[in-house]
Image (cartoon, rainbow, N blue to C red):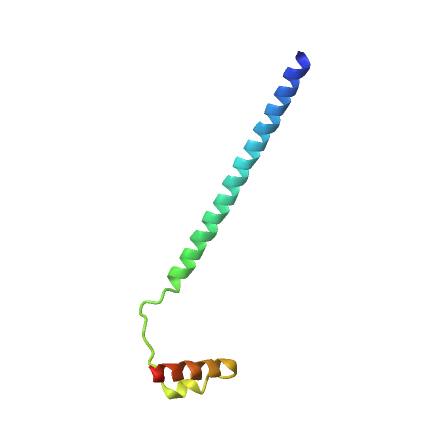
Length: 83
């Protein structure tokens, strides 16, 4: 009967160690995530844009679009003209 109680104690010890390691891992990972988030918020608040402006689309802007995107833009404008 002593052998089974020894095995139970060793099993409980393994589970306890596993749970303790998981808690330590979670605390370390959570602390790192919190620190990275705090630094990111500090950086983004320094570069905060105070005003957003709307830019009007002009015909000159279409010349800047090239390649397959220009074809897509032309087709989408054609669809709007039909409606």
